[in-house]
Amino acid sequence: DAKTTQPPSMDCAEGRAANLPCNHSTISGNEYVYWYRQIHSQGPQYIIHGLKNNETNEMASLIITEDRKSSTLILPHATLRDTAVYYCIVRVITQGGSEKLVFGKGMKLTVNP
Amino acid sequence: DGGITQSPKYLFRKEGQNVTLSCEQNLNHDAMYWYRQDPGQGLRLIYYSQIVNDFQKGDIAEGYSVSREKKESFPLTVTSAQKNPTAFYLCASSLPIHRGNQPQHFGDGTRLSIL
Image (tube, rainbow over all chains, first blue to last red; front, top):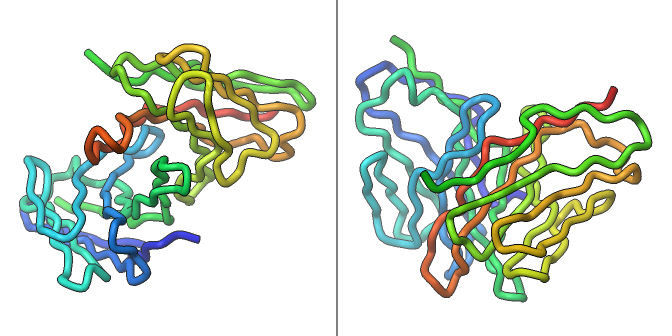
């Protein structure tokens, strides 16, 4: 029951911007969008998160549409080391006040030289 | 450096045996989580704990057990009742929600295989 939809894969040229799309049309008003990435056989690495405003940090930018039904992760200058599976995740708050990350299958980004 | 340590990295189990996976964190996080990942799939939540001596079942808790006797430690036992235990197991930790929307930090996982 993943709450996000991503294309299964995407290619990008080294040095170019990588724009990774995500649909989350059933997101609730208090649910955050988180992005993680995972390199094979390692734990997921946090990238960025947001609620409704655009966000930027040293790794990436996150653009969330005004209706919050979709978002785009932007890696401004992709490198070969950015090749990974990227997960767009909705953070759900349980009835007990705990948080729960709902993972989908993610999207494989391949950065080509 | 602060972080999450999972051990061992690879683990083999015979049919019918229980096995315990270790997860230790020195981030002073209150919340800890266990996830399971199957090939080509996302992560699924097994158990989580918001505070010492308290834990809740996640989406796929059957065949697993946990304990939270110390803030730093959240071991996961894969019991013989888990019929398909071969998977990649990931532990995570985070600050509680009321201390801001901080992300979960993950360890590097334990890969469990059945002999």
